[in-house]
Length: 162
Image 1 (cartoon, rainbow, N blue to C red):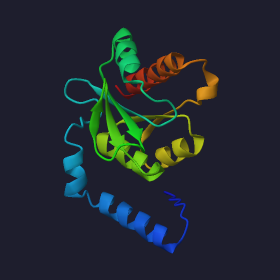
Image 2 (cartoon, rainbow, N blue to C red):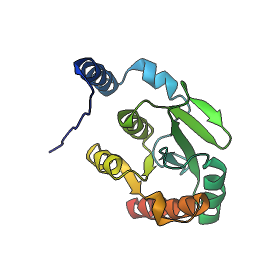
Image 3 (cartoon, rainbow, N blue to C red):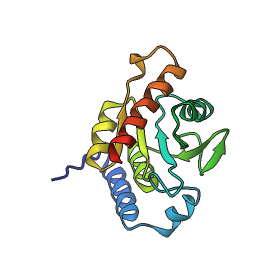
Image 4 (cartoon, rainbow, N blue to C red):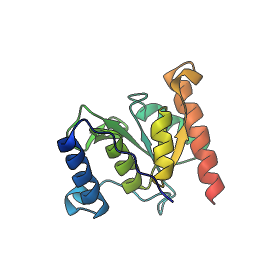
C-alpha cells in the first residue's frame, strides 16, 4: 500500500502539482531530455548516483574525494531552487527544483540514493520507492563530516544490495 501526501496552498496549486505528478509518471520526453547526463543506479561501471538535498550545499568536491577514499565511484547531484535548468557546478550536477516532489522525482528518475536531513522528505522518499540516507545536519559538526557520514551509509546501503 502506498500513501501520497500533497501539500498545497489553494486549488490552483493542487491542480498544478497533480498535473506535474501525472506528467512525471507518464515519463514525459521533456523531462527525459533534461536528464541526459543521468546514469542508472549502480550502472555498468559501478557508479552510484547520489542526490543531496538542500540540507548542505556545495558538497561535490568533498563527496568525490571521500568516495574515492571509500573505494566507490559516485555521480554527485545537488538539488537547488536557485537554478532553472540542469547544469554543472564544480564536481556535481545541479538539478532545478521547486519543492520536495521535484527532489523525489529526480532521485527516482536517476535511480539515485537520496541524502537528506529532512525527516519528512526521507519518509516520503521511502514510500515513493527511493533509497534514502537520512542524516540530520545537527548530528555532525561540519559539512565535511556530514559528507563522510553520508557516504559511509551510502556505501553500506549499496554493499547490502550486492
